[in-house]
Image 1 (cartoon, one colour):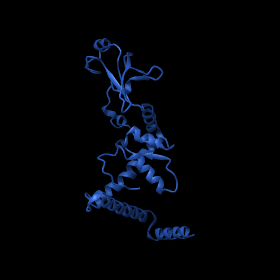
Image 2: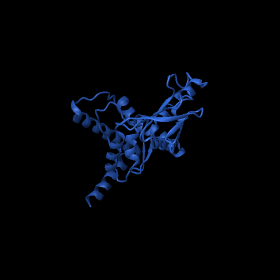
Image 3: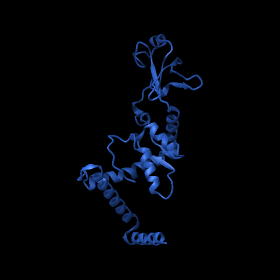
Image 4: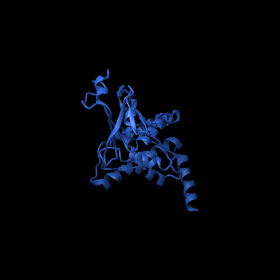
Length: 226
């Protein structure tokens, strides 16, 4: 499946593209893989709910080298008490809930713990002490992070780099398609569909060879006709 959209990023594209691809494919998708540009948990949840294995790194995983010793991932969440514990063992209690997104805010129970902590100034510089936030679907996010780290998932993700980037590189660099010639979304969609179809045809010729590909098409035509 190929599509053109007006959105400035990929965050809201994942579920729709999987749904559209499923309509085109004879067998339903079992594993859906993408880079961190698609890492919106609300969007990934739609695909996970279909029983499809999602392999998408979170922004935290994509920026692993940028994580410090006092990032939220080093704080421990206790579900039964709905609270966090900082790396020094001090408790952060629920302070606020955003009505629109359902995101929760937690703050250190006693600010003096932060002020007296040897890490004050590194962990936080706030007068009221350290704060962390938790999304309404944080458990799913944590599940997907663990799923992404699995050895089998990493092998698939490595394959994605070679398979997925190739069409973009070929179309943009080799074919020098760096802009659309037609105005409007319908025109852009038509150009995109032509480019994708031509790319697929060229790939099939490379894989099958011209004679074998013609035979394959003729065999499928007979099957469809019957």
